[in-house]
Image (cartoon, rainbow, N blue to C red; front, side):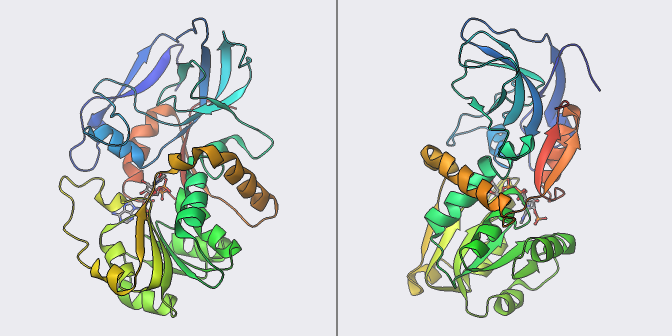
Length: 337
Ligand SMILES: NC(=O)c1ccc[n+]([C@@H]2O[C@H](COP(=O)([O-])OP(=O)(O)OC[C@H]3O[C@@H](n4cnc5c(N)ncnc54)[C@H](OP(=O)(O)O)[C@@H]3O)[C@@H](O)[C@H]2O)c1
């Protein structure tokens, strides 16, 4: 579906529990034109990410919430179609938080020019974008893996998890992924080279972790929280590092589940648990991007994307992300490259 105006997805009501279609509205406004100092960008790719659930919840967090009637927050790769600043030329490919809409204005402060020689355009939102940076700095700086360590990753086939496991392998670790379907397990083991995979929906987690991690767990890269995390903590080693990256199992609950109740294990094992936000490493993104791009060229890091066509399908795709229906980095193709 195309139009002459600017189609936007706005927040019509705050979701209660899992988001539904009626929480979102598709609206159309005139295509905006830049004023002095601004650029106009046409979106090509839109990134759907779990953090957006927090932004539409409202309330205090590390970033301001989306207000009712506002365009939903989201990372975009797009093309500059009008420029009234010398910093950007018409035709530049840029990336920035331009939201769920076809056209957006920016004063340039939140835009970066994408180096299109590093990878295909959507990688700027995935393996070479925010999720890739999360995997790189979360594992290497917070998790501090050593050769021979066992690294367990939850949501292992997702945008962040798939990169974490591959970097763990590059670092000489044993990589064990936890995911929600046999297809996802086959992918991380057979295609990405993880040493083992556990389906948390069908397997007994305790037994499966004991089998997959015979020497225990040295680094746990936690994307999900809840019962999966409780189970992994039972297997940590002395001086283990638990990297708290995400807690997606809790994002759609009105009240957080009780627990974890086994934090005493951190005392027994003198282990660390540390949350982080990828933005704290923003000054080092170029390092992360260069290293991951190098590994991609060497065939050591692969990636999988899940592409949905059309801005109007973003709400439904986002609802699927919250239920594990995505397989790889979830992207909306908004317009042609
Ligand atoms: N700290 C940071 O700065 C930062 C930055 C980026 C992302 N994150 C966090 O990292 C995590 C992964 O993000 P992503 O972009 O890579 O998403 P993703 O893994 O591509 O997609 C989310 C996945 O989470 C899994 N999931 C959904 N509900 C679940 C549940 N109740 N229990 C267990 N798993 C569930 C699903 O996979 P299965 O089929 O395997 O269940 C789903 O595919 C999220 O928690 C996100 O908030 C944090």
